[in-house]
Amino acid sequence: MTPDAQSPTSPPTSDPSMRRPPGGTIETSGDAPASVRLNGSTHRITPGLTVAALLDRLGQAGRPCAVEVNGSLVPFRHRQERILLDGDRIEIVTLVGGG
Amino acid sequence: MQIPALHPTSPDRPATLETGNAPLRIGRITTHSRLFVGTGKYRDAETMRAAIEASGAEIVTVAVRRERLLDAEGRSLLDELDLTRLTVLPNTAGCFSASDAVRVARLGRDLLEQLGNAGAHWVKLEVLGDRRTLLPDPVGTLEAVGELVADGFDVLAYSSDDPIMALRLRDAGATSVMPAGSPIGSGRGIANPAAIRIILELLQSKDAGGDPEYPVIVDAGVGAPSDVIAAMELGADGVLLNTGIAHAADPVRMARAMRLACEAGYLGARAGRIPARLYASASSPWEGRVATIPGE
Image 1: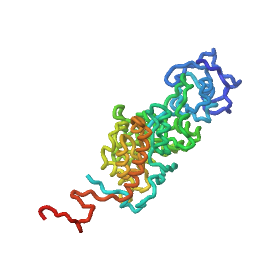
Image 2 (image 1 turned 120 degrees about the vertical axis):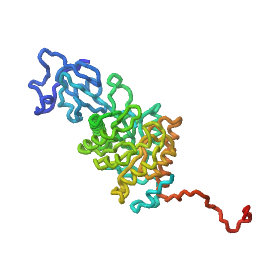
Image 3 (image 1 turned 135 degrees about the horizontal axis):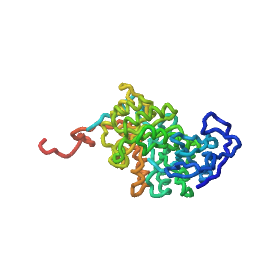
Image 4 (image 1 turned 45 degrees about the vertical axis):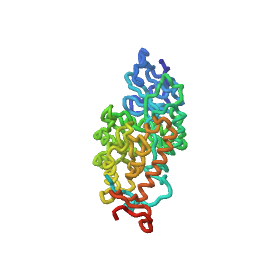
């Protein structure tokens, strides 16, 4: 899986992980892919990908799901802003049958 | 052992009711069915849908699990449930720590907010203490109740049948306590009826500092309709079950039986049953009988 970078649409915030970099396209020096844990497996993604863009690449955009990064919920309304970084642990969950 | 009736002696509850479906308020949710059913373990989605329909339940529990990202084409549970009619109660099943349970509760809320379902504000809290028994960890459960209540959740706390634990959960802010009849999926029914009854007395009797409207739902271990009746006759406000329907040979028929049992037990608890007695009491009059009794 090698999703492309995508520029975030949100204004800058004080949270470094949610800051919009100048120029729009997000790349680290040397284009080294970021290594993330996604639902327990290691994946390489383009650094600076947003949660929303990741879901889009995964074909999840139209399916109800919830996302957590490094143990904290990324609320639905913040997916366009939340940028994924090297080493992030990402969980994408849905609802299944249970008691 | 005969346990005295709860509801007929309570001035706060009507002695007679027309229906077995009197509304039950749990925090911000009001349900007209006192049977809550799970959505797990069904052999197929069609059976699940039919069983939920037959159960009359308005509230269904679901679990939060990782999305199967490589197999995302298949239908999901959310495609199978009529979310216009059903209120989803997400659980934290499979969590063994308070922090994991809080994470899962927040993930479930985010999902249900996206779906616009009324169940976004509540959670069935399970913090388990042991993988084989699936018995709740009381310390972790209590810790999670505090965090979730502070975060705005209505918390329905799965617990053992320990009355003191039930009090602690209520005092920590749980909207409802859900004592287990017996271990999850065991089908052993109400293992300790007296404990369930004491929980009800402590939480609901004004004499014990309780609130007659505080909801107590018996959860887990229910295997047969008679178990549902037993729980409701003890005075429970509702029963939650999954395996007892889903793994029955005929889940749809069992769902209907559970529904009728829930209504029967609800009405029976409020109808004022006769006291059990050691000796007989003839139903036909002694007066005017033509027979002689030997020795008299």
